[in-house]
Image (cartoon, rainbow, N blue to C red):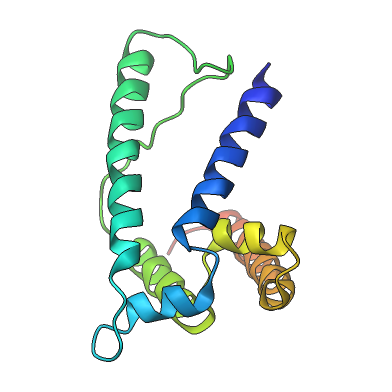
Length: 147
C-alpha cells in the first residue's frame, strides 16, 4: 500500500510540475531574471505549493504528536532542527546557483528526464554525481574527530 501511495503522490507532483512550467528551464530562468525580462508566473506555482505544504506539515505534525503513522504506514519523521548555520546557507547558495544556471532543481529535472528533455540528460547525472560527492565528504567528516 505504501508503494502505491508513493507512486500516486509522485505522479501528482510530476504532473503539477509539468502543468506549472517548472520543467521548462527558460521559464524558470525568466522567473529568476528580476532585473531583465521577469516572468512572475512561477510565483503562483510556488505560492500554491507553500499553501499545500503548510497544510500537509500541519496534518503531519498533529499525527506525529499523537503517535500515529503516515497514510502509507511509515513513521512520520519531521525535522528537529530550526537553526540557520553555515551548511544551510552554503547549501542554499549552491542550490540557487545551480537553479539559476541550469533552470532545474531536482524534482523538475527528474520529470524532464522522464520525458526525454535533452538538457535534463546532462543535468541529472551531474546532480547525482554531486549528491554522491556530498555523501562521501559527509561520511569522511563524520569519521574525523572535531578539533
